Length: 355
Image 1 (cartoon, rainbow, N blue to C red):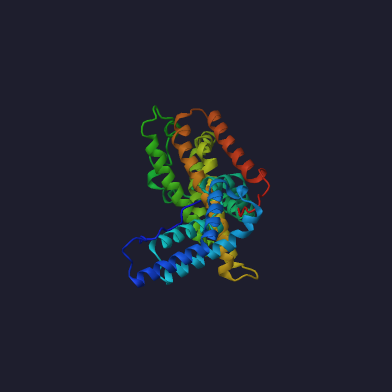
Image 2 (image 1 turned 135 degrees about the vertical axis):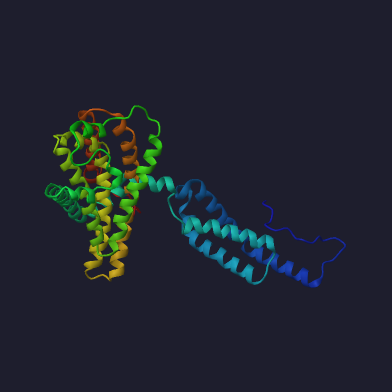
């Protein structure tokens, strides 16, 4: 037979406790004895749930769980109000806390959430904003064309569109050899890890900004996409002038098929918020923005993963793999993977999956 939760603080020997303390102890013992059976049963159910989830719980215990939990909460409230002994109070607080996590707490740990996210939740969120992806893709292509045309009309635009950090030998008037050298591989991997970290930081900042600007009805997001892709158009114009369009495309494809895809998704997620705020339909504006924001946030978690992959591809394979064919193969494989994952991979939704 199990020992009681709280043993009496006073012996039954020759020294008698003061009447008021003895009375309080008696009330505590009576309170405990009247409810201890239900507490013990709740404790056993919670312990089995902690070890093996709902599979280890009998139907009768599962049906009784809410009632037992409410009883324990009520007992805890009474214990606090009437200042019962510290041991009983501590036991009830721990029991109620454990039971709360089983009754109301999250049903999945991080590993379970990540599995569901990667195996359906992320791709469903991306497909849900397909219209915004189409709009963002159109804007990005238009931005590249605008960048090309502006620089073709006036070379001064090149220096306005291309950041100073990009301008080394890659400037209007550079020779074919100088441009080819800018696409050359590195002799060693020294420093490439630091380079990857810097790339991830820069790429993530652009994506987060594109998403965050969506609250202003998506207009700043579209402007940011145009500006970033105008830079690409200017670079394509420069290399095309020396007949190096294929070499530049191969060099960019290694990481660009992941990086630009991530920028596309982040812009689409921001645009999704702005479009729902501008056209909420029958919903209140805040409700529409909240719903779109939750969906966009799921997309953005995945975009961060894409930026990590893009940074690693940009820092290592792009810098170490030589030859347009090999580079195009890496870029093509990454693009095929992302397209298949987002639009062809459609696992069945699991019960309780909110992705």
